[in-house]
Length: 450
Image (cartoon, rainbow, N blue to C red):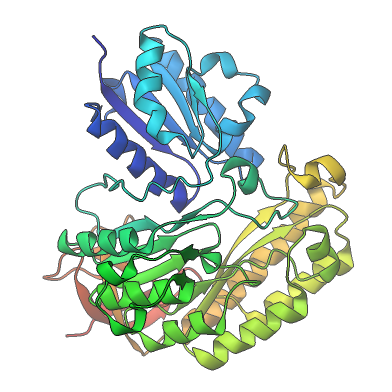
């Protein structure tokens, strides 16, 4: 008799959290029971990320630690690391390997393992799998839910493993997305985040909308792009906050910007990865935009949505990057003055074009120095942006209790700033007004404005 208690650990991005919720639903439907106590489980699934080399090493160390504590368990790797299983030196420690398109097979693979029938690896890609029919099993008492609208990526940036770990782009049926969003609203969720490696390239072809929607604007539509989907979601759940991630500078359209402006429940924040401010490096990265294109888009965002916050991803020390390339990135950062950024050292990822064809020839010390310069500059701009809110009144969605002081709540405003404020007779999930009276580069602080 198989002990059917399973435990899932997540590493990496929001997409992994969403995928783990899908896996939990699949397993629950087959009689498996999720536990939050690692010691209770004999099936431990680790949902992995391979964006950075540091993530890989952390996961292997974690697996070794778990096995040291308990040998009588099944260890499974899900997600991005599955594709590189053959290259993992510690693969003898792993009992189950499942890629992002094969989650439906997990119950059978687990049963096969315990019955010693073999067949514990499934990493093939699907051209159609979006898990649209599976309602993810989410944690209770949460106020924000991730809703995956598409999977995979077609961009083939030379530094990125996503096309090799998650496959080509596949857009999910819009009706299933709307249905899930409405369900989440009824369950008491206050915010949804639409997820995809590149949400702006969402594109769904097909009839059938006539019987599923009654709005005149879409009765005859057979093609739904991201701007139309975003509008449908905004209309369908008008009392929920809507965010989305991630956008691509090459694909974001004026239509998307105008939809963001039009609907009050769509948050005024755009995460727009740039990676580098140097056209030479952008070309080596196989990014589809140039510095000039990116600046034009930034100006367009500011003109259409003047109060919109903008964040980005930046990679420093990419192959052949010189001091002039680095300075061009600093110049771009100075021009945009991002609200916040995710900033990384470049590291080779097995399987990418850069790994096969380019030389990682920037020294680690140079990478670290350049990253420090970028981080310090970003802190300056974050503080500059946050100071502008002092004296203003912000609508905040309460997300939880501050980890630094239990007498304070924290939440976010529409533009994705974290706000700390005194607890009163409110609860997590409430929308309240807060007057901002102080800030750091990372957070805003204020008092309840009754």
